[in-house]
Length: 413
Image 1: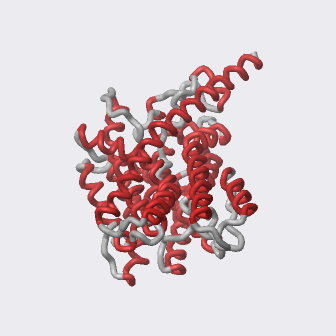
Image 2: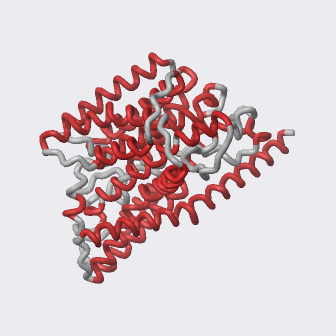
Image 3: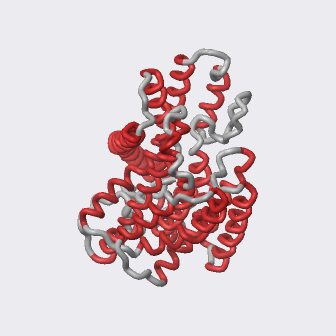
């Protein structure tokens, strides 16, 4: 979840009102709250500018990871049209574990000091929901639209009963897991299976906000160790790490989220204590690409996936945080990073709609041109959704929150 890790949630909060939101006035609008994942690429000054340039590689990692997950799901969201294409990305679903590590690193960078200094759990989670909510709600609307269109295109007993559709949609609007009863599909979020990662992310966010003040290094290592054992156990039990989206393996998804997130926090602390050697950001991006497309024999995949989730991804985030890119590279990675969450959360419902259209028109999309063409369309739609929907809506939410805080401050006075 690629998100899902952007750190500019607090941008736009009036420093004068920060105390009412549980944020110390000295912290509101501080340089560390600026998003190095949504930066304009303009040069800054001092340490903040150095970190902004360094963290550009993390943007690129998120972009590659989101693209890999979307490509992996092409077969499922296009009614079997892209079997050959998806078969070359057998382990790319482990990019989800990278998202969790990124999230822990980024949120620790942006919020750990403020959480320790008194920022409330409610204020922190309000910012997280503002960040994740708009595109998530759009994904639900698109998923419902896809189901209705599919039922119209293929009427029959296999369609969604009206009450089931309404109940599932209502539950998803509130991020409540509810399986599609009677369909044999016991996924947590049947309309958009990837949403389980957002739910797990928010659960871990709450846990982090609660324990941040008392999260000593020894406790952090203990959390990582326990969660790591559970991740390894899940990989051994299910023979892969593509777990977490069904009721039967939801515990494994939470283990992945807790391990990845708190390992990301640990990597941030390591980064602040001892900076990694400076390498080219392109090397880091190439390593991730190679990891996600590695052509492995079936028997090698479980240990490979566990190794990547437990060791490779945390190390890659740590090294990437200290890497460097050229101005052009930073610009490319900035676009990839800002588009990644929209691509991740929308690719299933949008891909389903495109797949229905392709099927209805009778187009042959099994070719490489068709596969990459669909992926390009998904990326373009995600970019438009981020620029024309998500950002304006979040700006409106921040203005509304700021106005509400001013009103509360006036009443209190």
